Length: 113
Picture 1 (cartoon, helix red, strand yellow):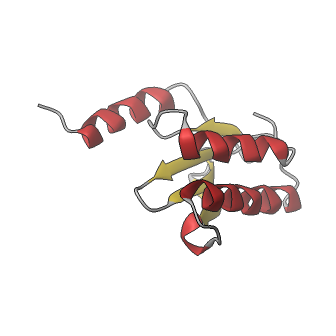
Picture 2: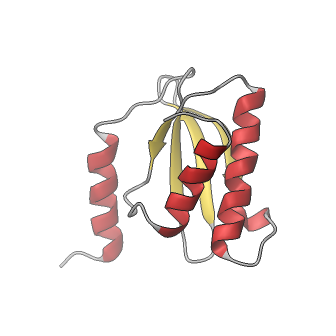
Picture 3: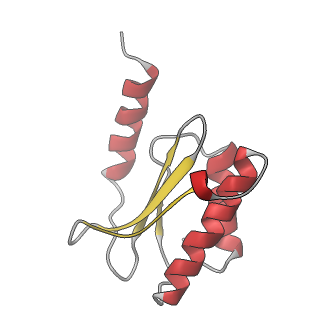
């Protein structure tokens, strides 16, 4: 019998087979735990992490508020580097709640995906 974590890893593997990030259009990979959300902008051609943010250091009362603050920080870093487009990798998680808020905030900040 497979655990929830094993099933998520299988979904993530299936999603990752279809998307690829470059330095001009990095892959934004999101991981969600019970307490925080972590996101990285990754260049898959060189296997380097360009930017990383965590909601652990963000201010806000709820997980969604901290996720929105983390998304704004990531968008600011990417804009400073001149990156306007990205590929969104939801990490095998459902596109609801904090993952959706994170993605919507990135779009509101002017990033395209």
